[in-house]
Image (cartoon, rainbow, N blue to C red; front, side, top):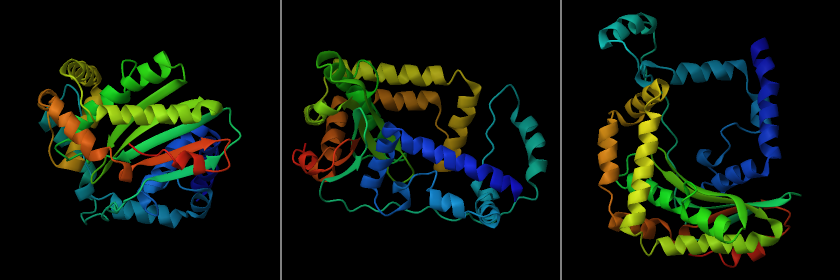
Length: 307
């Protein structure tokens, strides 16, 4: 019990830190907008109330339900044989519980109109997230979405970076991210901008979302492919990353794709695939926006929320 009480204030301070950083708040707020009133839309760290109420018995109960043999994977990367690993690992898990863990909470969809949330902060910048639902980790188009994300906002050669930062000098930080969960995903753009330029920045991001629906030239897609492939290959030079790569796939997909298999999937994505995914996902009725900054009303932000 004393260890629980030592950790509790540490987590509360972590929550305070996250809430004090406007860009972090924008990240959390966009999840609330996309997935309201369900677990996926809540901060993984919890709230001050939930963290304050957690007991030792609740922690032990969760461990008992979830840390079971059907829910565990041991993934090891290194200069060892499979037989050596099995011999070393098996004795530690002989007494492991064998019941099925609690099931995940499936995501609830149903969005039919654009959604927006504003959080007032006396900040020097406005922090903007514009997002749509993405694709799950098992979806066949996930690599097309990853390439779409690379073209739009991943890195210093992306469209958002070149347009909003290099050309218009509107922002310092602008980017997009795609995430793939077990039964859903997200595609989020972020920009931090001077408060007087917030509407211009939002308009520019929405313009780029509209433009990418018209297609991506093969030359631009080729650059994005090589960027994604190069980053993956470099990442796999680290043995911890290799172990994580294998373990996550085994746990979530019940199979392990090799790096070469993933590279082949990336190479197989066409410009037509990217345009199709863009037009499927980037639609006005599925649009979501979160703004953190010194504003009292969200009326002016809702007017032009369309792509």
